[in-house]
Image 1: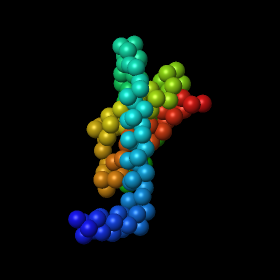
Image 2: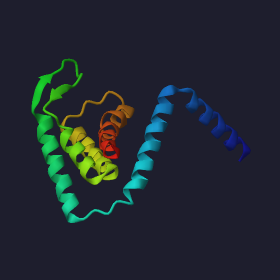
Image 3: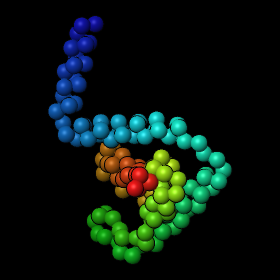
Length: 137
């Protein structure tokens, strides 16, 4: 048992040496804290319908590309974050972050570009959840 604890300590210290591991740990902690806040949300049918309309509008606006950048660098589109911002302004940051998370998942399904598994966390759900933080302002 003592050998297991020592091995666990060494493994944990190795994980903390890598900046990529620290960034991933931070991202996972942010997701966990956000999901804990999602449990407090009271969703009625009116809010769910408006979130669905905003997600549909954001997806359509995402598909209208003005400029497509080379080498997988992304694209400039017709304001796909505006519906997420409006939901965040109307219903607050919790609903806005939920809408951003859902749009990140939809964006991952529609146009995935994955080079590393950790990139999925930092390219799709977290940035759009950060857009939902606009409800604080």
